Image 1 (cartoon, rainbow, N blue to C red):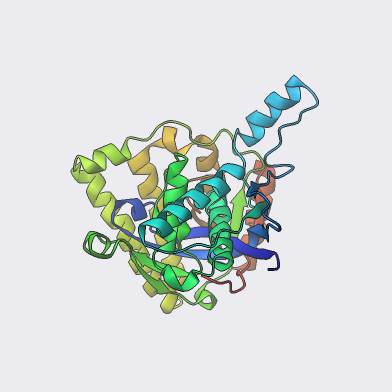
Image 2 (image 1 turned 120 degrees about the vertical axis):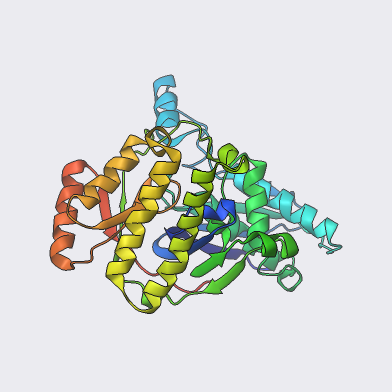
Length: 341
């Protein structure tokens, strides 16, 4: 069997995040600017199962102690090996629980990624998603594990590692997602409706080279929501409604309305979570974009911002100048090419 290769693209949450963790709705798109690739090479002659570390993202050899410390400060402790291990475990357990027979041949898994770290672009999910696609094809079980269930497996793998997130990041391609409690309880997954990426106006990604000083304070939002705090519950419901309104705005190509909804999404998130959790670097990115009249909000949980220039190219030039002066990177978001679910 030849080596398998699958690519999964970075994702932006255009509207509705973080309501996917609270029975809400989201509107998300994959982007072609960044991606993760996973390779699966079948083992021959009874060879072992190998999870191969990445030479950069799983670095363990350092020239000196100061280099090690600098590396940890800039890149963190964790690479992709743990993600590959976690999805192997979750995939295997799922197959056992559902009487799906797997062949006994081993393999070597490896990966590469260019998705900026801690940028709210689902970098971890992309690695896990691409790895799951490799496992599905290697074991020839794609037809036995429904497309709607696969995001749950990706989420469970990340939860194995203590990564806190909702299902939005794990649903591939362009989708309007409804995570209403009734459907989730009945079927174990949300309602995922495809969206046409051609409906999107030009969008721009703003991010920092080093996002390490983004919000680090623990959030109490989950506990407050479970406790039924009225103002928080109503704000989260409004965030979910923004995704629904955004879908209609896209269908009508009402981009001024879309801009207003994006700004409102961030304002509600900031109100619910507070500045200490949101992080001053993240706030600065949003405020830099808004200083020239563009709409802006997080792509995910922070680390990067998606911006819309309702006034066109002249406004884009102002945005690029403002970002350069503030020390942020800005680039136009490219549509991701089609990929398997």
